[in-house]
Amino acid sequence: METKKNQNADLEKTKSQFLQLGIVIAVSLILIAFEWTSGTRNDNMFGDQKDEVVEEEQIPITQEPEPEQAPPPEVKVTDIFQIVDNDVKIDNAIKFDDDETDADDAIAQYNFSLSDIGEVEEEEIFVIVEDMPTFRGGDVDKFREWVQKRVKYPQIAAENGIQGKVFIMFVIEPDGSVSNVQILRGVDPALDDEAVKAVQASPKWVPGKQRGAPVRVRFSITVNFQLQ
Image (tube, rainbow, N blue to C red; front, side, top):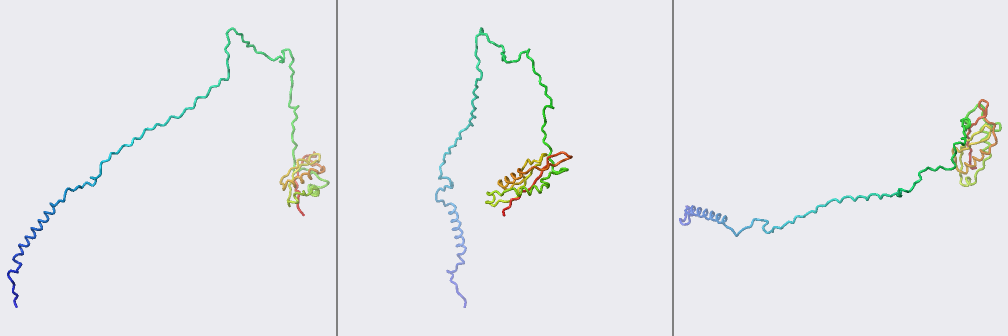
């Protein structure tokens, strides 16, 4: 069956007219949009701000003060001069003491010689000699035993439990006496004093001899303090 079309409803005839009308309307709208203004526009973003006057800060010029100078030292007058008149006589003569020796007095002369002054020389102390000193027919060990029997234990050292060995050095003189008793290594003042007293109380020895002459000989012993 063939479809029938109304001639009045055919839009192909008015297609070109509507197209032209649409283009004209579109162009008109574009032109109106470019020309449209709503008022004067202020694009300056800083338009609302007022110019402020910036005051320049004036920095005062400072000057470094000069250091204070110390006042000059006061001059002290040590000598006082007295002004006298020209007609005053000043005695400038040098006065000597009356006790000076007169020219006629004899001057005693004293002659000195080095032989008049005796030189004191300490005799040499030996450790080993040809004939060693002996104590009661024995050597130094016999003397150590004698000292060990003679010493007494100090009570204060015993109460405090102090004990040990005291090392003593001494010299046998040419006459056999004991001298120069010294502590080489001590333990306690009480023990040291007791050991020194015992050595100093020694009877005379038979002195040592070097080449037949008595000489000084040095010895050292230990005194043992031990609590029972």
